[in-house]
Image 1 (tube, rainbow, N blue to C red):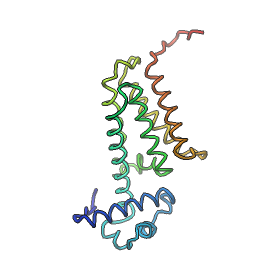
Image 2: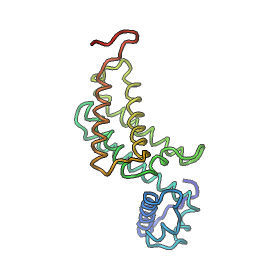
Image 3: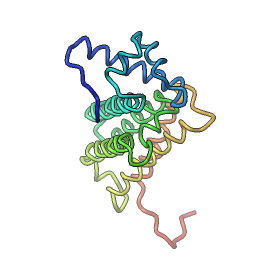
Image 4: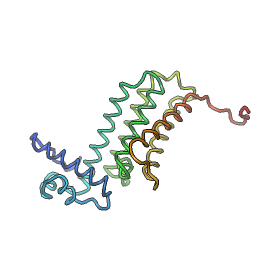
Length: 212
């Protein structure tokens, strides 16, 4: 991250993590519009000057929070996919639940972490996160490729990855947002059921009537 000064001492690294967690909490509760260094400093119990000694400004602090959150999501997805049930449905279920948990916990600011301003460092980090989570999905699904009945399994998995991410973002941004983790879990269950049904259904033939 351009201009960011990584601390060398353990105590300084602990303080940095406290600042990043405070910044994440402020973003989740106040949003970007009301995000201030003073609010972060108060929540982290440090001085504003201490934050400016580490970060050039608000934008750089937000970029650090973005990198921290997205890295955690990538690592969580990788770990949970490694212990998924040994079938296609198990892989899709883990993917749906990890993404839904991340969106539900992150609140309305999470979609910004995936797509910030054009040509920005933040946008590039979001693009890398989407690419990495999809790569992890494809890698975990590969041993179960024979279960996919679509004519192009790779394209079908791409559709599923985009659909699940898009559905979670839409759920976050709706005014009637999902009320808490149980609702997000149920939402993820439904998404994974829908995705598995699609993957295990052969392509429909255009121009022919469906059986009645």
